[in-house]
Length: 283
Image (cartoon, rainbow, N blue to C red; front, side, top):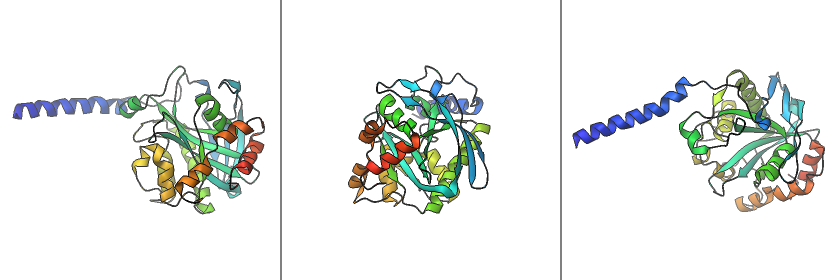
């Protein structure tokens, strides 16, 4: 029995070392043959309350999911002009526990931009969550897009549903969150990082960035890993606007039918304004 336990311990140590070493030896990079929608890093020049972003994705998608137009734009974001930030949830795989999460920021002029942490994929490469939990197969990066791009991508390209919740935290904190996302985006250009399904995913990267603005703002929970529960968790924390209980709030946050209905509005700002006008409660 002692010999068996010794061999078992050796085997576990070998497996652990085999999984650990690649994360230490292999270096994340920006210079790969990226697929088209991941081909450009957002380039952020952040100052005191103002940031210039280049390479904001503003693509147009056909109803069959194909790309009708691949355009990239630049924008100047002034944090004092932020009117409302939103937490966006995109369930996929059919499991309640799995979802992609994003943040959206609406400004005084109606323009609205999405910040999304994504596993950056090369041409022909498919996302593999279990593999990315144990091996460094993807870098992650911030994707900045117009709402019309990101929501059209989810609705037509991915075929996923979307829920958009207004944050209920004070506007000063919302602006701090925006500035944190801009700093993280700027930092990643200089220092690429590995994506990890468990430790560096679309939700916990955002949560850690928010916690750097105010320690403990987003307590650790299972939602950091089981990202499909993130909206329920943030609602319980009082960080999402309450519209009559979580189920009623979630129902009113469901925007997929409106995205399809309003997608004919070509101007991104006008699309975002119309989307909010049509949502129940005008959020």
